[in-house]
Image 1 (tube, one colour):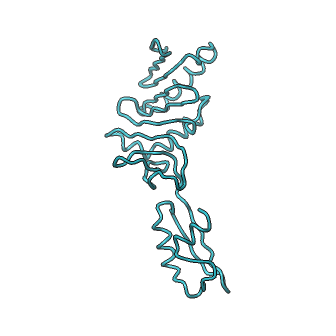
Image 2 (image 1 turned 30 degrees about the horizontal axis):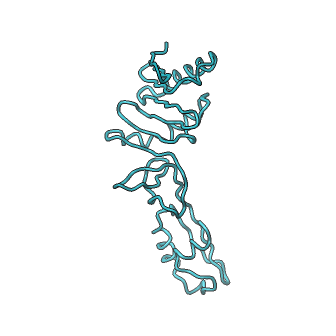
Image 3 (image 1 turned 90 degrees about the vertical axis):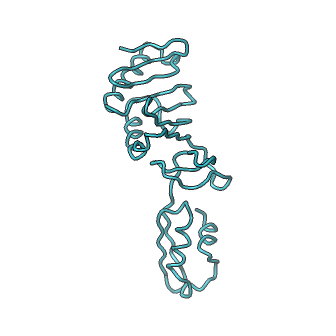
Length: 198
């Protein structure tokens, strides 16, 4: 947040008497912003205020009541997407019955990113949580869908990495359009055919 944003939200202006302001009221006003997670206001005599703000970090776009919102890494809503603080982020879609995965999403994506995959969830155009597909990411720059079942996540991730390594070794990865790893099986689709990888 810029200094002007903070002053405006706190109803302060440069030159205000720091002794006369109500610190609790300033904190209350700042916490009303959907972007503020935590705030601390302290007087620094003779005439200053020290305002420390922890901002909420947007990680995704999500749909809420026919509008697009910013959401944090666990899918918690922050604010509506608008021209103010605009950021292009992956779109997160959550099917009914998969809401429990939102709490695990940061850990799952961190494990995915720490694997030997040549891709990063940070580059995803969209991420979908579904009962049938687990976690699916569309990586626009590579034009590929990656799906990993959340039951037996570690095993599914190992199989996905091994399959990608094998496809790269054989110079076939560039032709792949989707890979799904679930229940000790991996399906590879090149756009024209789909086959079960062994």
